[in-house]
Amino acid sequence: MVNEGLLVFEGILAFGARDTEDAEHFFEHTLGLTPAEVEGEVRFYPLADDLALAIDTTGGFAEMPPYLLFSAPNLEAAREHFVQRGCNIIEMDTAGTEAAGFFAQAPEGHTVCVVDQESLE
Image (tube, rainbow, N blue to C red; front, top):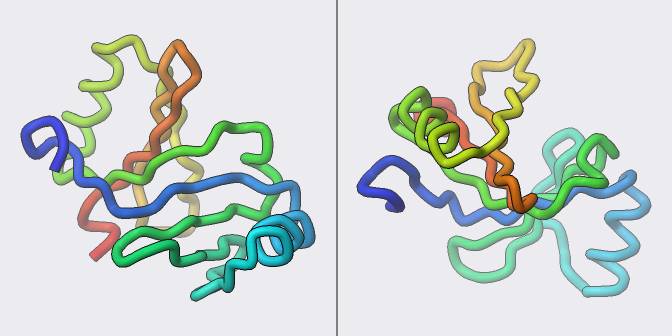
């Protein structure tokens, strides 16, 4: 847990790729990683016990810096935590899913993704 129970690191580092071919070339051909799972446009590459890379191949996040995935038992409290620290909040497009969450981007450009803990269960 991070920040006195406010955030839980889910063991995922995420990157955006231009497309599937781009992701396969770099992460599989260049780095030699094997995807453990492919869920739609997201490929998961295990790095170690409880640590994985998630690569979004939609192209929508290709220019975004890598980010860590956290869950929060209280999404509103987590959102307020980042707002109070000057972060820009970008709501996730979760249309048609039960997931809820946001990206928090610090003025320095660092980004994290925070999802509702219940949506991961």
